[in-house]
Length: 66
Image 1 (cartoon, rainbow, N blue to C red):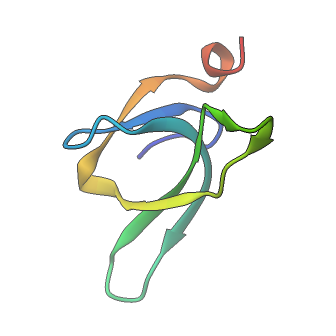
Image 2 (cartoon, helix red, strand yellow):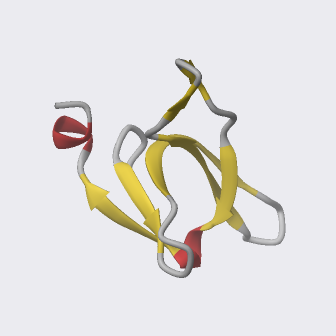
């Protein structure tokens, strides 16, 4: 399980950001909401939802926000 507040990266696309949400569906599917690290015109971008198997945690919460 990936910790909320940590950094995660998509194994296939390289997309990386902060883990801000987690959902678990009745069929067992777990998805994480990832907030991109980069700002667009000084404004945070929208959260991107990704399936848990394609994500890897790259930094724990205490290092992600440092």
